[in-house]
Length: 153
Image (tube, rainbow, N blue to C red; front, top):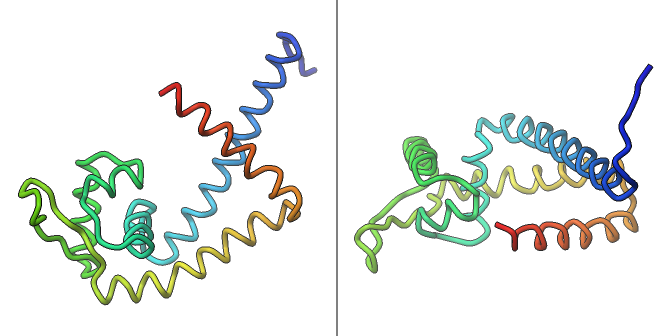
């Protein structure tokens, strides 16, 4: 027999929401990482290609903040993408300590080939569970929660 402790309505609701949100995010992450891997990329590599494909060349530090990655890990990711001919890295003219990363022609072709498919895959995942109206309700609520919590960092 399953027993649950009751901590009060607000606490129970908050904990329940957290568990549901974490499980949904973990499942979505697992599925999208699997889809990204089908293109021969890690999640971090895809994040770099996606950021450069949408935003253009940027410093390694900017890539770190866009992809929530540490500098050391990003260096390895960029090194591997350079090795594979997907990005170029050059010293910044403004700051000799910084490097600018940009997609090569091969990298841009990969971005063009896989991003639309990835976007369709994510769309299929979301719409397999939620209606237009539910998405319209959920998106601003999640943004509100995320922005509010970020202020506590």
